[in-house]
Image (cartoon, rainbow over all chains, first blue to last red; front, top):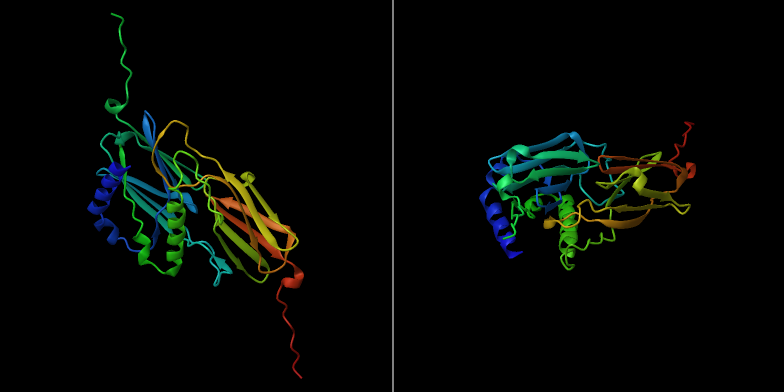
Length: 132
Length: 154
């Protein structure tokens, strides 16, 4: 998808300043994004985040997700340490085709699902063809 | 194209070695996938899930991130030779016939066996899964626990 990559790179170059002021350690959560006729769905793994600690915001065309991980009892020393524990953060530029007022989200078992409904005008429509 | 993602693979380079390993693993799994044509479900890495392991005087603890799973989806076994096995399956959540923009999360079956540092009592294993984080607490065998030796003053 070369077209997609070009758009993503452009988006990445545009916004970096807000992140620098935050400080701290964040992990970039993994996402799946798929599109059906009516909506775009974003699913994101943020294990360890409690439902009340999911902060999802939409502002100026940007959907931003911050998941705060409450500190867990951490040992002084690990026998094996294969992954790090910390907050999750990731932002997404949302196209104007999305009806921002109708964005909804649900969180279950460490997975956040965001529904981004398309505006009526961009939904595919079947055009009735009358017999002549 | 209705949505753009800001993908920032280098964000974590700023952090310490622990984060570097985290990133390395993510990159391996991420790039390891593109050899397969979508929408075929990518197989999970052999070492899935990553596990953190620690102990105190009485217990050995194992923790793994398994978002999207519930406890009944998991098979957890501790064998007599002190191996912990995690077995499970993550189902694809998306309906068929959708257009994919981004696919970074893995699906499929996994099985992982970890050698425990000490002998544990297989009958005293507790597991809980909260918000996608699995924690297993295993009681050490009496022989494996540290013993305090009383020292008599002459």
